[in-house]
Length: 172
Image (cartoon, rainbow, N blue to C red):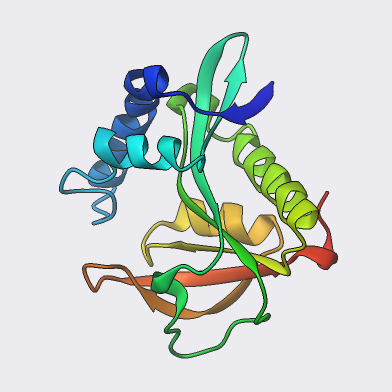
């Protein structure tokens, strides 16, 4: 498997994974990733900024994520808790795995590679958030050793459970 930056021409294939995740969340009655989010325009911006990554297996895209280092305004306000670190951090957004690869630890590859990138950049931690009802993602986040830190709010005001893991705690 290869963890690489996404290319513009891969947007249609990435969107298949995103749409499958959107449908799964809708079927679970989880109001996350609905209302045309994420969409091809967001992916294009991620790719142009160098923040869109994919995992390929035998030439096929099987997972996607946006990985961004630096201040994320969504994370400036945290309620009912606090962050573990104050320095440079990375954020994992828009992570999804192709349905046929769910439950195979693919998301852990995204986490591991993000920690390697963070360590190389001198970041203190990695942050991630998810919907309160997205239990599968919460399990994956907690299994990877992230600590629950509190509630943050997305641009549209929706609350999200926020997690952080210090890089020195283990980037394997």
